[in-house]
Image (tube, rainbow over all chains, first blue to last red; front, side, top):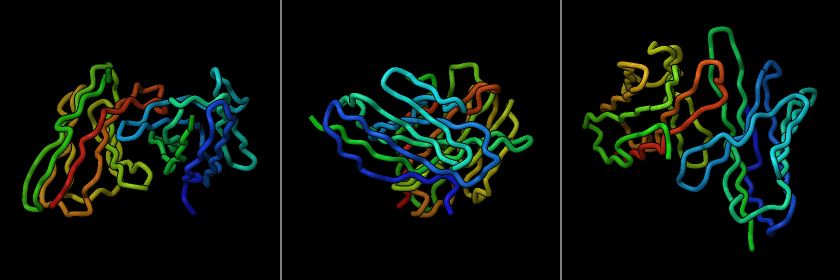
Length: 112
Length: 113
C-alpha cells in the first residue's frame, strides 16, 4: 500500500464549480498534513496546512479525518487559474527525522 | 521570484560523465533537501541537510553524492548515471520549526543518454 494515495484524475470541471479531492495515508502516527500545488512544469508550492479542526483560506477548505486517515481539499467557485496538480503531503515526525512524504498528485483542469 | 535558485535548469549527460547540480537559497533557512521527480511518480526524497549536516540519506545510490558547504548552498554531484536517472531534480529549503513548509527551486531537468 502506498504511504500517501491520491486519485490522479484528471478532474475536469467548469468554471464556478465546486470540486473536492481526497487523500489517504497509511501511517496512523503521521503528525502533520499539507496540500501543495504544482503547475505544469513548475515547482511545487505550499497551498495550505491542514489542521485537526479543519481550516479555510478563501475558496479553499482543508479537512483532516484521523480516524479514517484521510485529508480533503475543497475548492469552491473554481477559476481557470486553479488548473494544476494538487499534492497531498504527510509528515511523519520520527525522532530525529524531519521529512515529508508526497502523494502523486491529483490533476485539476478547470474549463471555461 | 523564487528564494531558491537551481542551476543548470537543463542538463544532458552521457553515462560516463561527471556533472553537478547547484542550489542556492536566499531565505536564511537551516534545512535543505534534494528531491527527485519522475513522470507520474510522487516526489522522492533523496537527501536532507540540517544545519549543514547530512541528516537523511534515503538509500540513494552512490552515483549521487550530495554536498552542503554552507547553509545557503547545496550540490548534487552526479557520476556514471543510468538512463533511468533521467528526471527533474528539485532542491528545497525550510526553516527548522516549519518542516512542512518547503520552498522549492524550479528544478534541474536531467537527461541521461
